[in-house]
Length: 133
Image (cartoon, rainbow, N blue to C red; front, side):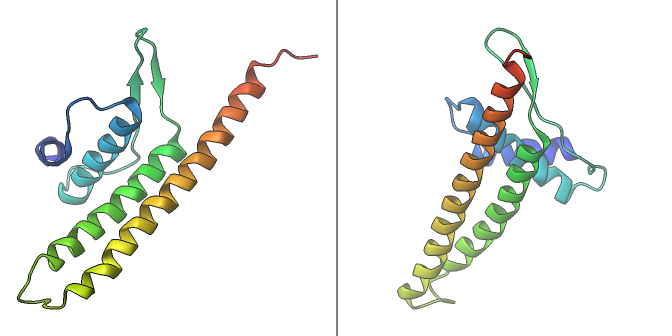
């Protein structure tokens, strides 16, 4: 069951030419959909990438958790966006502004957190590569 839910989420969001960064978030989004809507799915999420040289890398669990959190927020925002498409229920076009502002702020906050985590990860990787004295 979870396979079909995640495939549906993928069909709704996939765009040709994804890079690895976008694919990681898309994977988390699809997995989150399956976890939320298929009783047989749950537990911790593990994401792996296959590099151009064939090397398989495990994505840091903090990054996966952040992507899942972002997906949760994205699902919530999508629900609100659908509400705002109803011109009979919400007649005032000015009411759209707050949801757009919220979406913008959510994306900016996520991007800032992602940059900080990426910088910390890269710093950690550099420290591991330095020869011991």
